[in-house]
Image 1 (cartoon, rainbow, N blue to C red):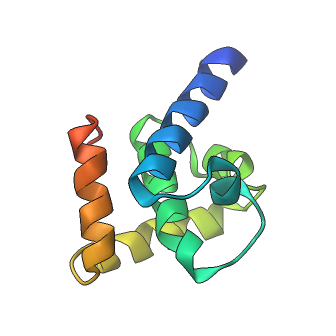
Image 2: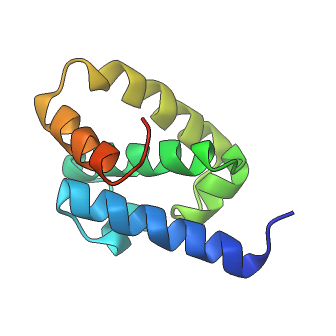
Length: 102
């Protein structure tokens, strides 16, 4: 089981990378705001945390106290948007360049 410090480090690392790739603030990604421009960074954060082995519930808790259903919806939506949104594609390329596989 991961320690609390390891979990915090995972979250900070992912938030920093996603925030830089999408040009947003980390606090906005995990905040409660529901602006449209935060959707893709938030969903990318969900995806990267899941790739690190986090449960749906843990991802939701870390990302603004959302439930596992919100995380699952975000993951499914992200997959559909990758092929259709150019800005999302560019941000994902930047994340890949930093070593994240999407």
